[in-house]
Length: 406
Image 1: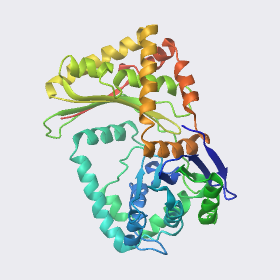
Image 2: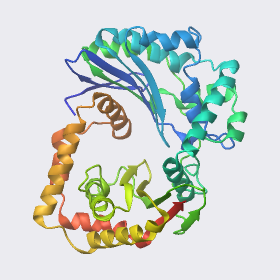
Image 3: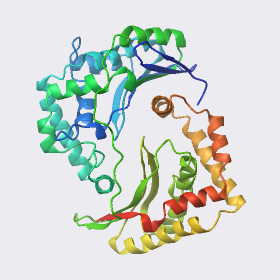
Image 4: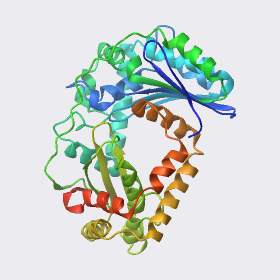
C-alpha cells in the first residue's frame, strides 16, 4: 500500500486517503457491522439494509440514487460479510464531491420506503435461491452454519425467507442509526485529490452525524464437537468442505497462516492440494483452501468438488499433506520459494485498485493503521520453517470437521 494520510473528525469518524495520479478514484465507508450483528429473529437484516439503503433518502428516490454516479460513468456498490459492510463508489476523479455527498446522503438520510422493501425482498429471495442452486456456495454456507452453531455467526448472511418477511422499514432505520455511526465506520478514499480537501468534504457531509453505537456484545463462538456430516442434495458432484475455527485477525500467527494457506491450496496451480488431487490424479476440477480472520476468531477451510467415488481418496490425500506439513519442516529452498511466490502474488493483486481501496478501508477500520508493502514483506520474510510447522499442527486434519453434500 502506498503512503496514506488520515484524520479523525470531532464526532469520531476516521478518514484515510491514499493520493494517486489516476483519473479513476474510489471512496466509501467501511462499517464494522455485519450479519453477526443481525437482530434475533431477523437474520439477514445487515444484508437487507445494504440492499435497501439505495431505495430512497429524504432527498432522492431510488432512480436518482442509481443514476447519480452512473451518469458520469461511475459505479455505486456495496457488500456484506459476517462482521463488516462496505458502501462505496468508483468514478472519474473530478467527481469526488458528487460521490462523497451521495454516500453521505445514503447513510444519514435513507428512508427505507415500505413499497421498495416489498420489491427488494423478492430480489434477496432470488439471491438466496441462486446460492442454493450453486452447491459449492451452499456447502460453504452450511459448513459455517454448523461450525458456528449456537452463535450469531451461525446463520447465512443472506438470511431466510421467514425472517426477511419480518423485517420492517423501522428495523432498517434502527439498524442504520445504531450501527452506521461515526465510531463504527471509516471513510476511505484513493484518488487524485488533496487530502485536506477530502477531509473538508467528509466533514461537511458526515460531520453532523452524532448517533452512538448500540448493539449486543459480540461473543466468541463456542467450540463445537468435530463433525463428519454427509448431506444428500441430489447433485451430480459431491461438494466437500474441511475446516475448523482458528485464531483472530489480531494474532501474530496470521502471517504464518497466510503463507501456509498459499502453499496448501492458494490460487497457484502449483499448490500442494491442486497438484496432488487435480494434476496427478484428476479427482477434482476445483480444490482450494482459504483463511478468513475476524475480530475474535478465524476460519480455515478446504473445498473440493469431485465425483462421489473420489471423496474419500481426496480426504486421505488432504490428511497426508497436512500431516506432512505439521511434522516435516520445509527446506530452506522450498520456504524461500513459497515466500517469493506469495509476495509476488500480492504485488500482482495490487494492480486491482478497487480491491486495494476496499482493503484500505477494512484495514484502517480493524487496525487503525495500514501496513505498507515493505512492512508486510518483513513479516513474511521473517517466517521460519518452524512457524509453518506450528501453524500446520494447529490445523491438523484430525481436529477439522468435514461436510460433504452430494
